[in-house]
Amino acid sequence: MIVSKALPGIEAEDRARLVKSLTSLGSCPRIKSARFDDWFHGNEPWPCSSPEALKLLKHLEATCFPLECAHTGTKIGIGVATGADRVFISAGKPDIEPDRLLPLALASDLKDGKVKWSGHYLANPWNEKGLIDLDKNPRFESHLRPHHELLSSRHTAKKDRAENWHKTIDRVNLSLFSKEKLYIADIKERLLPALDLGKTYPQHNLYWITSEQWDLRVLGGLLISAVGEFFIHCYGVRMRGGYLRFQAQYLRRIRVPDPKSISPKFAQKLRQAFEAQDFKLATEAAMEAYGLDRLPEFDECLSTTK
Image 1 (cartoon, helix red, strand yellow):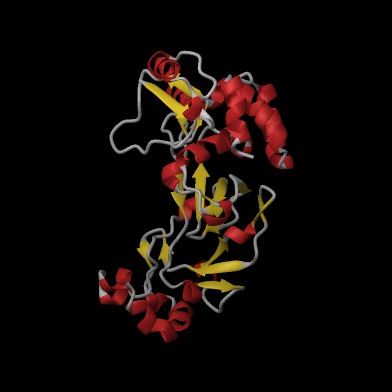
Image 2 (cartoon, rainbow, N blue to C red; image 1 turned 180 degrees about the vertical axis):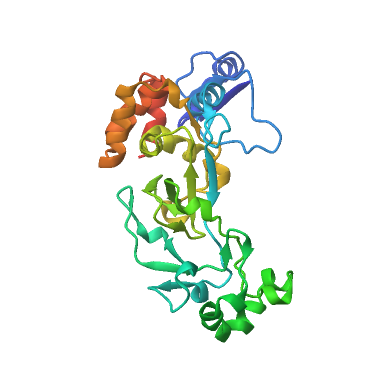
């Protein structure tokens, strides 16, 4: 399969030369083409990119691992949705049982690759066994009782038993709280992960990444590089104002090298780049980690991510 893109001035191009370029990758300065042995399958979206970018994308898909991968024990998820944030989320400690207080990270807490917690808490109706018993948590029950009508009218409460009116839409995964994880805000102008050291739980507009094998600072360095952002530009959706959507379905399609294949030298460079938020250093190290060695077609792709 040959994929081509017309450039300005193509209307003045000689027809025979144009046809030759389209069918056999002939030389034509007003059209760019690339040959593909394989194409996108099933319901996969077709990235809207140049032939060079698509060729690079297919190469990386074939030679690297998906970001969410059993091989590395890397998982991606989204924070807790409550269905009533103004009831469950407080800017400060509400007067409830201490074990019902869960420090909550918001998108606005992500700054310079770190989580600068703003002091928000989730009134958490879940424990390790499931939904808590309100009779055993009277202060929690008193906190929610004035909002009983609102909470009971939510779809998540209507489809469940009436006595479970105090649940959030999502169950809180308490084991996630204490893990180191990368947070990525749903809507941002570029891919800017921030590292949580197991001190907060994410709100619903934050995606999280955990891994059994990756040093998350090294992975963060890969993601903030132009290589990491390249995938989002290929797969993702750009919104009004130039903002990008970083949804799990796009994050999962990012490709990364095997963490064991990254030398200590480049791992340290990626770690340093992430901690300093040095995007140039991150890109230089990522190019080496991916084995790209400044491919000419990738240089052109990088110019579209700035």
